Image (cartoon, rainbow, N blue to C red; front, top):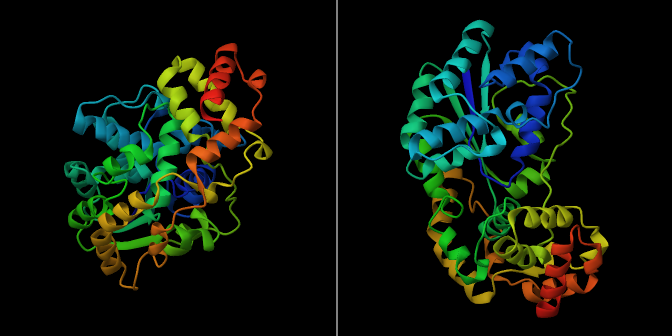
Length: 366
């Protein structure tokens, strides 16, 4: 039996890949590929599909679409003493989750098991015992590791937007957030990778540049073409994908998360997720969130990490376009925010409170 571990990163198409694996779980199983459930909802869902009680996968259910995120969060909770995130609901304990996977392997006898979670990337930050637990569970299996990485300046911006979406209260990227992230797996990709390679010594590594993944057609197309597994043809690879905010809205939403009641802030975030493109006339690629000096600092800090990645890949510079990190985009974030605010009518906001907030911030930033 072979184990294929997708270990991240965040913001590189993992949601689309998980959707593909969950949507086609039954067809994959018939070809000897197990995308295992980790708790009762996922198991009942697979049973309903197998008995034709349900025609389509319910991909809006997090534990159906992203079961191994639930597993990874439970493992992190075991390691840190923190709670699992609320969007996965009440999860069973880690021993039960691991036993659930083992029982599926024992009864279904797959040729390949795929565990896919961007949350696994967090294990590199001092949670090596959790990596060892996975290794020990599959000690007799051949293992492949797949890891997708994004150029760090682009990644930091995308990850910042993701945290805004979940309501985090943060300082701007240019005022300390970006430099703080350089000390984490969200910038230090060596921190992310090295523990996995040490624990799974000898495992085959598929280390992929996100730009190459996009050129291959997306996360599903790249993963299924690269890993050592024969996927059945003609399976649906359509969506879902995470929605994001226009970068011009980042400072508006940052202040909303900091100042508004959580419910009001969430309503405003939902408004911006559905914002018509014509109301945000400056494309994301033109918005500058860092500034030239901070870009130079980030570039210098990333240089030894990039050397490590390039040695691992064995194919020259891992990010051939890395020097573009040094080039500021043409429109500073403050100007992009002001232009977006000029397009907004406060009376179209979802609530009276958010209308007042937009009126006030419009006067301050526009």
